[in-house]
Amino acid sequence: MEKAKTLLEIARIISGNDDDVLAEIEESIDNIEAYAQEHLEEFEERNISIKYDSVEDLQWLVTVNILVRNNYVMQIQEDCNITDFGWSLKSLRTFKEYNLALDSKFEEEDYEIDKYDYNEDDEYDYYNEEMDFIDDENIINWCKYLDSKWFDEDICIGMIDLSPDIFTLFLASEENLEDLEDLADSLGKVISTVY
Image (tube, rainbow, N blue to C red; front, side):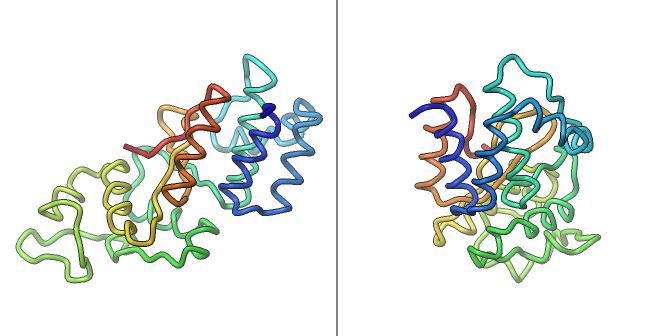
């Protein structure tokens, strides 16, 4: 599969076949440098450099940017708090499409764990103690927790490896994530689980 088709297939899977997204990516691939310059401000707002080693690298960045702008992919700093993480996740279009829910700990501004009283809205907790989950203040543990919570729905959180201090995340089925891992690998890029 040629590289442009591979990028389109990645975008098709992540966006659930959104025709507008696919058309924009296809158009951007045809004149990638002009497209990147036209949208330079978007990259700068998210502290992403469009300096690249090849046209293929720039096409990769632009594809991810289009998915972010259309709320199929989120980007969040690794030092974010749990509430910002939860609200960013809820803003993904696929969150609504998959009919997912978050525990209150992801939505309450000043969520604090009571070490003596288990949070009653958690039906199943990935960890033996909820405080391990919260005390780590760690996106990786939050993703593990949510993946286990959504296991029966066959939904997990995938990651696109772009930057060491920014998590670039999306929602997908386990099967689709495996396909995305293979497609990205064929381009020399990384899509994987968060952990």
